[in-house]
Image 1 (cartoon, rainbow, N blue to C red):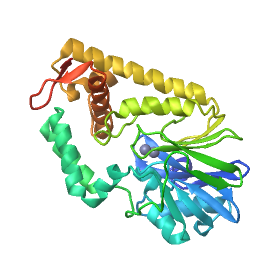
Image 2: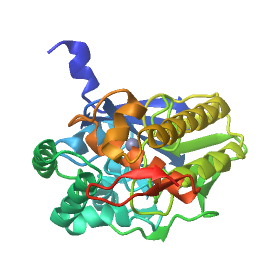
Image 3: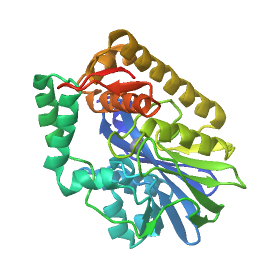
Length: 332
Ligand SMILES: [Zn+2]
Ligand SMILES: [Zn+2]
């Protein structure tokens, strides 16, 4: 294996500004090679923001990344998770066990709990949503079998010691950070803001490269919630964004606008698909939005995204379910 490829697969740590370190942790997911955890100086230790996916060897990657900036898991005084997805929360149990720290996270994490409490039921539910949306049975069975083997990337459930709701503050050497609830990408999503330094820890709400993902089925209107969360973050007027994946970036407002534009474009494509091809299934709308059919790689992502657009158009009174099995959509 070439050196460059091998090096990418290791956890790495680097200082981004004095008192903040980026811990870049490898992921086993196609198209998403890393996630970030952030360590922020706090007294004789650090506050750790997110902690990476749990899988064999993952703790060594986190320890290696910390070690590169002269930190250890024992230095973690508090673990804060931006949301309960596996790549941000997966190693929470390891971090809490090793450091004895508290975990703070938003209480709306049923989307994660369901998969841990009863993996078979959670998978069966996703299978049924996909079937109802028109995904053909054979590829769906193959996807379901591979999903069963993949696991969820979470060591085990740790309940938050404190509920990370709007207005909660986190004290660090760089000042006090304020929690802002930003549901949409996930029901449990929050961003952290440091007003004097105009820093934003954005989790997966804002990424350097615009990439939309919405958890389907846990809240009334994930797309509407995401758009409202973009307004929430826009009002903060942050200067430097520390995102859940990729490098830091400064043009925060341009990134917010790029997200709004992409959501508007895709909503318009769904609107047109329903108007021109309805009654139509969510599965048949996917290629009209993304330009290609669902694959095993994109299945879990694009279908949920498309269902969330349809749900948004249902909430705004523009589309409705026309019944049937699989379910079809028409103009309201
Ligand atoms: Zn996420
Ligand atoms: Zn993520």
